[in-house]
Amino acid sequence: MQLLSPTLRTMETQVVSHTDDIPRSDRLNRALTRVSDAPLVHGNALHLLRDGPATYDDWLAAIRGAQRWVHLENYIFHADEIGECFAEALMERAAAGVPVRVVYDWWGSLDVPGAFFRKMRRGGVDVRVFNPFRITSPIDGINRDHRKFVGVDGTYASLGGVCIADEWLVRSPVTGLPYRDTAVRVVGPAVAHLEGAFAAVWRRAGHALPAAEQLDMQQPLVPAGEVEVRVIAQEPARLRMQRVLQVLLAAVEERIWLADAYFLADPILRQALMAAARDGVDVRILLPATNDVPFVGAFSRYGYRPLLEAGVQIWEYAGPMMHAKTTVADGWWSRIGSTNLNPTGLVTNWELDLVAEDRQFGALMEQMYEEDLAHARPIRLTGGGRRRARPTRPESQAERVARRHRFGRISGSGAVVRGVATLQTAGSDTLLRHERSITGGIGAVLVLLSLLAARFPRLLAWPLAAISAVLGAVALAQATRRPKSPRARIGYRAHLRRYRERLTRRFPRRVQF
Image (tube, rainbow, N blue to C red; front, side):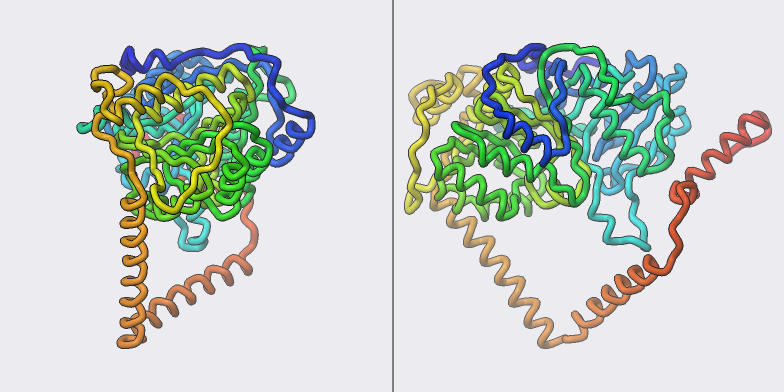
């Protein structure tokens, strides 16, 4: 199944070497290692994958060629056309005797029929659901497995922001632009660190991986290139990526460009972005113009003004969605992963990101970012905001073409400018109307709640009392119950599955479920 178009294939450029002029001091290296809990791993080759079609082609090719194992972890695994394609590839490998492990998130795949995963289990795939809702620990439900990872044979790994769903294959009927996302293929010693992150999540969802499917990070794999990377495995309350970005924003000298899907950064990260912009750093944030979670997009725009006033440049992509979670700084520091810059991504979720410290790969990331800007509209303050001085930097060809097109100097016949034909710069008036609508909506809701509480006090008192009683009962139950053994934590479904397998092996013709 070839999903990748010739246009997108041009972005698939393999990086196997790096330049030696990276301005990374020992102090910065030590700081990044400490805040990320991720050492610098040498000897890797990276392959940039742009959008769903390129990523799916790469993942499916790796899965179909697996000989030792397949490990797949994804927040969303839909039972649609591309989901069925992956299910068939996984079951085919399982039927060939290759161990296939799949873990999906309970909340992310909540709307997927259970029959879809049962079919894969019957086909020999070991499927686990991560952190299903439990009435005994409802608060733990905020901790989700938001990672997107594929590992094959201990020699191939890939991660990014791409889920398994048909949405990642669509194009905008208005602009013709694709659903934007980014992933990366990794070959080399860093594969062991990525497999280690998967093994930790797999163990949390049940029994640990067999020893034959675990790689020893102390015995690195054979080098495949010269790219230096860090594997940042975020876990709830560890704040690893947030600490990394704070250190990076304090050290960046010329420019830092970010792309994000659900931008709701906390005050600490927002202040770091604003401080860097005020200091003359070229800070750019690329966000979706049309967000698939509308209320997040609305509240994200509500926070634009302070960033713009500080000199941060904000752009909105004109395709169906900008879902990539990427960063590139000073041309040598690049991030691709699953972490959104909001409280869930930075604080409560399991996330997985790859950081490359390499100028050649950084150049590819900047090229991709500039092409996205050519298909995006800038958000500008035309009134009170004052733009601060920027370091001198040559304008890229993509930016130059897009700028000329916006002012009507050229036609929209080129491949670069086709997507911006309908774009307009969003100004201060548009932003002000949006801020007023959000403020008015919040005010109306608060007034309505206050009137309801005054007229019908029991309407709010009883639900609050019920919630408090449930939370109190859960806390008491957790405080008094005995710790479960590792076997008990697996759950009755896993025990039933193992019991069924034993009976089937002993009485293959008598036992039917």
